[in-house]
Length: 325
Image (cartoon, rainbow, N blue to C red; front, top):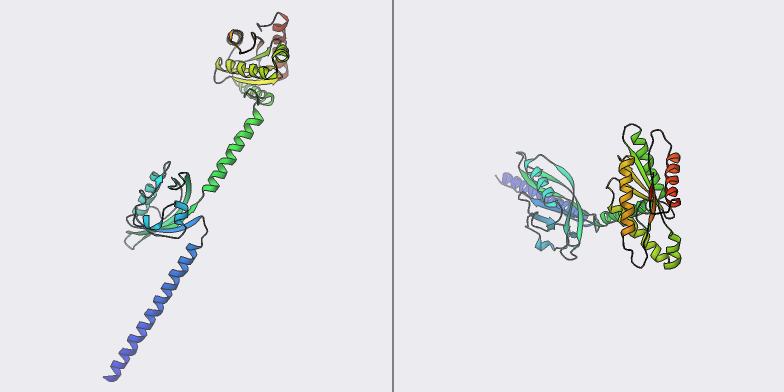
């Protein structure tokens, strides 16, 4: 009996020591895991949510990224945690619902919110996964969140600069209309398009009358004002599909797709009258001479431009402030 008791005692001690060893390994594993997630970097933090989507754990960088201390977040629901922007609440809710139903095991989602301290929009990327029991019931959700605000802002800034560069490369800086290269490109594209279709295409070329006198008598600042103001007047008098470009100096081209010669003449007359009747501050009456031409199928661009240039100069020779076709 004594030996049996002794064996039982040794067995209990062995089991206890083995349990303590396993427990120590678990503690060390938790500490190692905590050390890893705590050292992910200043733009990362790890988290865990329970089956009700309430936060039960955050690593140390949470406050730096989200702007709220852990004690104000633990136990709070995902939806009510921050002032989310865009469709972030809907995206997050759909993701969580997918985890709950077991339809989704992992995800990579971008979301945005208003930082409670700076008041600025911040962007985060969420990578997490759901843990279910053997019956498929949701136990918890855990994952890593990355602050990608700097990256998003840098991308936006780059896109904006690209747009600005493209605008500078394609527009006339003074008037804001297409530059010579771009308007010529637009005309070529329209010519290629109508080669396959029986559709009209017309151009208007206009030049200012006695513009040198404006610069000489009133200065180049007034001359620039006249160019910008006239462009604004003409832009208001044409369709959205029509395009204006600065051909060179004070000469401009207007591209009118789907417009025949008769219709384009009417447009040119309205433009001429609108400019002549406009009151330009500090300047006497401004007039323009216009030429109109319709594209002939199979005609080269050089031929079309030569014809319309001749028509514009015909208007000048006939006394200016008129339209020729």
